[in-house]
Image (cartoon, rainbow, N blue to C red; front, top):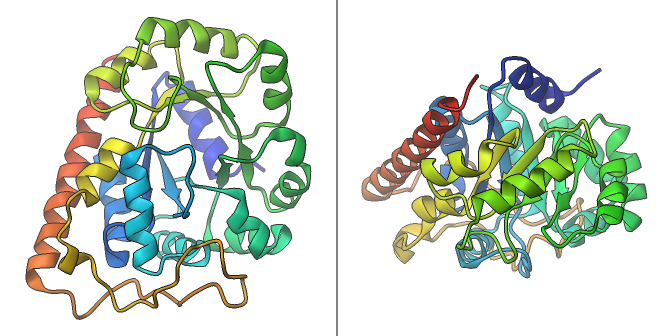
Length: 310
């Protein structure tokens, strides 16, 4: 039986609608801000949620998501806490697919089988492990597959055709095509080069292909989406939600757990409160304003993608 992710992408392909995957980091800029932000992004037009698990050494990330990880870790956010956010989101939305994105260290510390079972119970549909090569992913893929969770791999502009075949053989859900050489949020997007590369990937697989990295607005999304099945937008949303958030407003009563990769599932940091009753009115207003701005960007990108329909 297809999970939420596969069902959603199949539905979108059947009506020739481009998928919009939206990324934010769990716990950034405040733990209690994440679930409302997820609902707002879906209401604005997000088809799939990609929820980042903060990590202390996010080597694929540019400055925006690096800062988001630092802010979230300062809030005490962990892998376990991120799954708690998904579970809370599922209380009101059992339809929108959720993909966790993070680094293998946290999952290995948790335990692959234990993580897969906990992720399934929380309502997770897919997983992106940025630093997991396909040659070393078999055991995690088996654990996830037993729970109906897709393991999603990335293909870069430098990936050879032979290596693409290996990745595509083991990839599930969708293929994440990295639009440029560099980290998330980088510039210098070359739409025609991306379209040609995506066409080459699509010729080798029936999986949907999403393009991410460097997509900042409706124009850039429309430019790279023409030959793809959808786009991933992340750094632009993360910047809106958390960049320059007042330090005093970002502080939390959560335990100062240094990193989401240091605790096992039995004691993986604090049971993070999803609502901070002590949040000031000013902080709540700032969070609401930033959430609305992020939703506005999602609506802009959604409109741009829908202009390509048919």
